[in-house]
Image 1: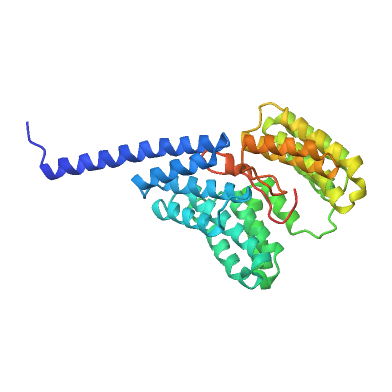
Image 2 (image 1 turned 135 degrees about the vertical axis):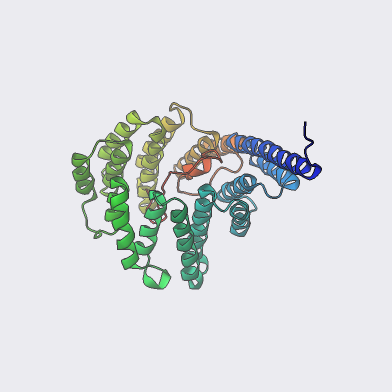
Amino acid sequence: MKKVPIILLMTLLITWSCSSQKETGNKDVMKAYDLRMEGKSDQALALLDSILAKDSTNAMAWYELSRVKKYMLTGGGNVTIDEILAAIDKAVLNDPENVIYVYAKAMDLFLNSYMAMNREPDKVKEEIVLTCNQFEQVLKLKPDYPEAMLYLVEIYGMLPPEMGGDSIKAISYAAKLKEMDPFFGAKATLDLAAEDTDQVAFWKEYQTLHVDTPDVLKEIGIAYLFQDDPVNAKYYFSKAIEMDSAEQILLLDLARYYMMQVMQNRDLADSLLPVSAKYINEYLLSEPMPVIPLQAYATGMLVKTAMFTGHKEEAEKLMEKANSLDPYFSRAFGIPSRSLFAPPDSVTHYFSSFFRPF
């Protein structure tokens, strides 16, 4: 029997050790994700820090760290967008061919661009260029990624040229998207359509030509909300939820619709906020039970309805409950992206417009 050369043996042992360490590290990253889903972001953060202290090349750990920090930012945590970008940069640096991380970086850059629109308008175009370049990098890795292409349509099509918009590029990407995926192609077409386009008629025409899906029913419901017709919106949302229980989150869009009506006219608070609260409670009682961060977010919405209707004591109890579920629950008006709650080893296929309320 031939002896294995010592150098080869050492190489095999080192390779095995690194592989084993990485596997253990990724299992711990999943534990950190589970902790965040349990409303324990501080513990998740501590675990990720310990993982990276042992192996600073663990891309999944950097990715999950960026998501923890992004989640904490929406909940008023002492976190900056620069910290989020630094973490996702490390994830991409250590695994540049992983589309999960490359796409997440594009989304984080888009968030930074969106924040700059109010914070540093002079820098928006520069940030948008970086964002679009990153989405294009996503498409190099995964050309059939419709969500990434739709973001490019929205950015180029909805922003003015001085902020990085480019109507020619928007039309080009919309055409490619239409060939790639009929549903996302339709969304792109609507993004570039005239403002007075009848969105209900648009989606109903699409519905007649294609098989009903939860996504199509959802779009019809949203179109009705834009027409200030929440009754029909609820009808189509209910049909979407019947087909896919994950769409129960649409109940929160109905609740937000009534809240927006009150923001425009405070005199409607006593009549509309109880309706909003009804949909929030319906969501909280839905099956399967929403993840804890979304339970906390929905409870935080109830805090607002109680405060606006003068029920201060009830609002304080609800806030205590929300904080007990998850102290970093999102304080933003928009519903947290479901992409934040997908496991860290899964490709994200949730799309949430930065330019539309629903």
